[in-house]
Length: 547
Image (cartoon, rainbow, N blue to C red):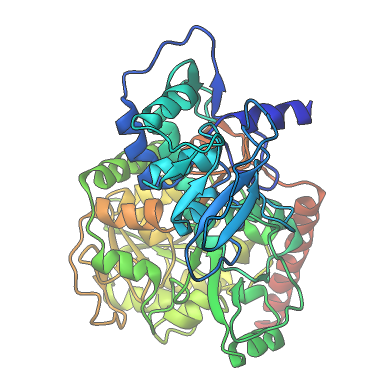
């Protein structure tokens, strides 16, 4: 069955890359009785050339001679299978031979036909081969197996046969019909991700229980190079989950002069805590640093400071924001709840606790030492407000540092809301005060006033009251939908847990709403039990310290 599917998939030009663990049918298929679509061959050609997709575009990019030459396909027509190649004859110059599956001599993997055809001055291949069609799309002379040059109109003929007449296309996420233009743009989205991952030589610090969901998001056409003990070299590039990478490994990587990309959880992550080993459905990969480190510019800050947001991006951001708010979706949870305002007519302020040894606190905390100090500072500035303190879920679960004994918290706060849904809390208050917590961003989505005491990524753009040391380079004034577009559309990477394909954020959010996301197995249960035990031990120890 798999061989039959591979053979059928190879016959079509628009093919889904073999992402690790992917379980989706084809995006293009022959469909008898389907009439020609309304889009013209020239319009299809423009889309294909813009996105550089078709054939095994995820394939290898082997080194090629510095001088461009001829590319000769051996093995014949992929549909006719005549076994004939083009006769090179006495043509002078460099020649590279590729079989009909796009493999160069001595290589097992298919090559990216766009890589090969871009290099070639001219191509010798059948009209119905992938490399032949790509050559025409790139405007390269195409010599056919009979020695003739492809005639004018050959591109339109090939596109009509392979992509227009009798062909149907489907959205792999929903299974619904889509247009050829939509299929091309989806493959272009995948190409951008794959090409961004090609330079990776090793991925460090990714726990085994995360690797299955991270592999498709870090795949560059070959096996994802997860490594525990990599060998740093100056010309290599490493992606690191810094908090989970041994210090000696980080020191070796940084001292060798390697390129380093930082991996962190995305801002819409899962239904369940990462500390409980629930795998993430989104990550961010930043080539400049961690998004929560204000000491240096990051890729996210670059988008926020310089990107020219389109009307379509603003529209998508607005629609996504409405879905997130309507579905009660936060970073780790989904669903609505109710939280009663207990302070009467007093101004209600939510103070969000965090993990005190988390990197976001250490890098962007603005010098505040503890959750208790944050709570005390908010009280000092708001003596008449009704303060609600929310401990961090990882701290409550017993996995991380940051516990504030209830006796001390109640000396400052009017109320401790340890278990209410964070979305219900945000929607019940007038203001949200944070150090660097993502809850501040989620509060902006819900129209709440936000005060930052540290330097989260969303501070400094005119949308928050900032009391922390925000860098002067963040002087641009953004609209809320532009912040959302940067943080949720342009910066993270998302996975569809059903097809295991990288996807736009709208797909992941819909899966969260449908409840089709992974919740983990026995490991998650064990982590929850161990966390509860650790939390109870801390509470008992705190009681004895204050007796």
